Length: 424
Image (cartoon, rainbow, N blue to C red; front, side, top):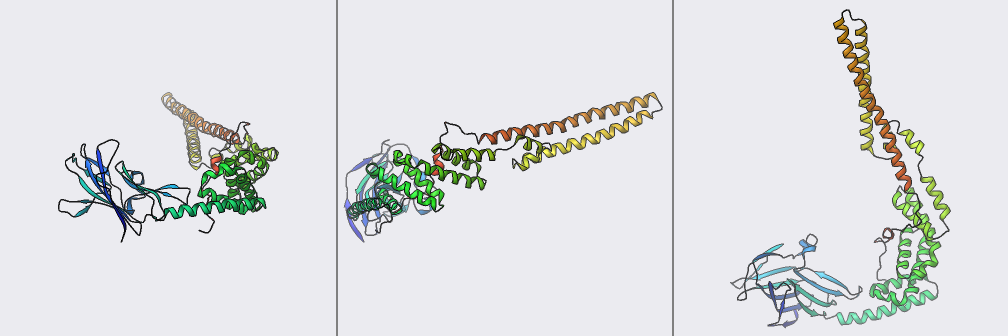
């Protein structure tokens, strides 16, 4: 059942490139939030294919191609974020008066000129009744439909919720109920993010105090996210908690190292180091523990491939080095045995010709023996050098640069989720 129908006749919305001329004739909105817009489309340029993405099956696959036909609206409760919807269907009126589905994902739009065109009906389903500032875009042309029927009511409700969240958060902060205060501040930020400009000091304190609570509960990653959030809101407040955050980063880094997450663990320990003086000695001691001995790692590499397997955990490199060493060693032994046999035959020769022939063969095998022996020794030398370089590179991870800048993106994961906690 239709809620209302409005006809916008002779109002033209033309795309920037002027090839397509779109006239929005009328639109209908029913009680379920389904919107059907009727447009008269003209192609004033050359015939061409256009993206015509609609229906649920295409949403994930062609989301980047939805710029030709889409509806957008304001999500009032979620900080007025803009949401997009693609049509559920697009149909074309034929010369017989019936409608057929537009080809998808592309549609061949013939040139029409000014004297003719096509009537399209574009349907969008389940638009929230409290959506704000609804607009529809077709081939670069747009029409503003305004608010849905319940949007004004939701805007008033949002103002009341925001006021309640802020007042409750302030009261909780005054009584040092930091966990609850932080939750209400999150609710308020979700409703209107720019309130942090007015209440940045109190919000940052609440987030830091909640981070401390989470730290005591051993919820380290979430605690880190709250500290980072507090830092981004008010760094001067955050600076008063640098010792606490340093403790947290140190513990988190050690846990990562114990779980063989070396790279991120090192980042956390270095971050702990620059946050304050409190944990610097412990970080340096931990880094010294983690460093590898050049002697022990190089000693393993005397057997080519062993250190690459045990220390570097590189099975491919280990297999290549060990294989090369084994083959060259076997060929060295084999050729040395052949050379000795030929030399014995040379000593037992009864004629000059036989002696010359056996000596030549023995000399040839000796030269091949030297070649393969060189390859075997070269493989050992390469293995030692490779492990030495690898150990140096590994140990360089634990060198602390005084100008180190933390990779805070590591601590801004999706685990920090702002969500409405207020009953709606």
